[in-house]
Length: 127
Image (cartoon, rainbow, N blue to C red; front, top):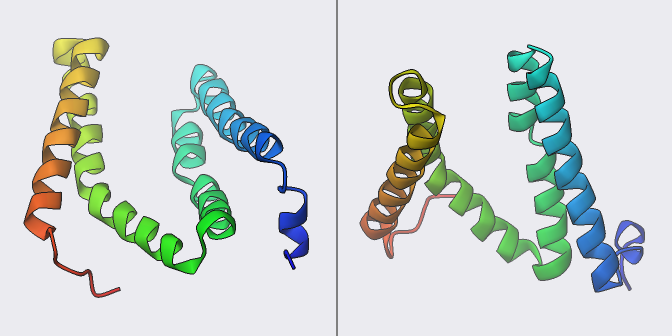
């Protein structure tokens, strides 16, 4: 028997629509507040763990607790490369322009992510 909060998610199409609306809402709020000159609030909304909470719930509904743990370990693995990506964009935008700094930041993120995966390949995080 499905828990009550999962019962409305039985239809795959409905689940995808709900996921899209929630992700889009966070993106829209972020863009709205940033365009109003409220960058700190915009960043707070982006980093607020609402999407992560929602992701944990959805992943649990789709794959169970083990998949939630694997996803959480992945989040921890990719956090340092993400922080480097943000620094590259922050420091590069004034010097290289937004587009070039975004491309460079994504390249740094991908390379560091691959390096971390290789370094930790087979190693279990103590979580």
